[in-house]
Length: 452
Image (cartoon, rainbow, N blue to C red; front, top):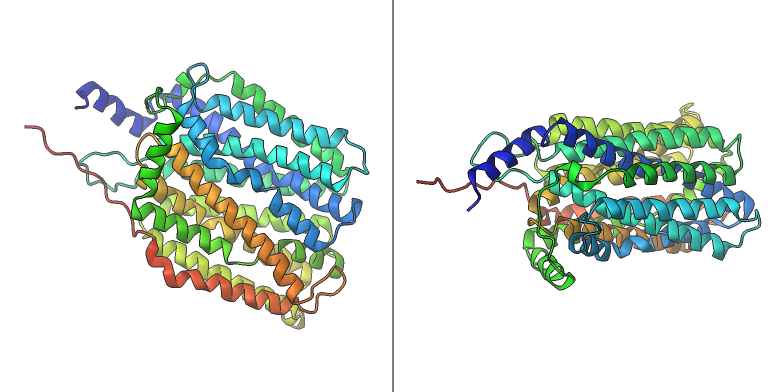
């Protein structure tokens, strides 16, 4: 039985974050972590132009690299089990964040120090190393968010989701701010600096994150207590028990499939906009800023107005909206908007950037739902498994996009089949909606029996 003092301390932690000092340190660590995570679009914009203009790769090769670089994300469950099971100097989150930031800094600074004629294979290895570090950081951060975002198991009937989504919304906003700043800075810097200099800039930012993190001790964060003597076997068995829950495994299967069955055309659209339409890099940067601003606004609106809506209805609505925007891209490629006097650059700014982030809109409500479903003690493992499934789905989506582009015969110089590809993409996006019953409508607050 939980003692009254522990219950009071838990209630205080839920309401006030365990004190202003602990809350401030958590916001610093998580805010900086997700801000840097969102800012990763800055060096990746440079990577796209470096591969296109420096190494002269074709659209399919660019997209294959973009997808293959996500391979370290697939091993997230392993990182999650390590984080849940192995404590380093009495800590099981902060050291992993510091280690991941260090790996990223090393990889991006190594690319900066490499010659301009670096081989495609070498830069792929460096990008894989960087994404390995990013994966470790994301797992530790997601685990902390899941721990802090679990709804209180009290008998109170006051909106069980009132606090459970606040942590997720905070980090979502932090990542969105990082995305806005990264894309805005990237759009400006790509015309003024070489891609290598942009790689160095991001490496310096990661070094700052590393230095800040190593000076934060986990005890100052007032995280929920969990057993520190659980080995990998125990943690793995707990993960398997959690994944056997129908509401968890059905949801994860649907969520991953909703991404995997959509052929991604990001590399093809990048070439279409820059090579065929001649859209300037600054316009692409503004487009991505507009999209990230929409993500920021989405986090605020969700936290204030949408948490009470059924996750199933909300996620299905986002999925349908994605299909509408893809059909809009089909009209754009066919020149329909141009016939009405809408410039290509205006459409790219307003719609292309928004469609890119629409893919991620459903992650916020789904993460809130999974944090509520997650059994105590294996938050890191379950959330890591979710992100691993998402990484696999994104990789499959990217490879399907390459196959689709080849099927409709889209090349770096011939985009006549792009319209057909976009129609197929929109149709594939609608398919998961018919199976949305796999997603629970919500999680009811657990009630404690009254003590007599």
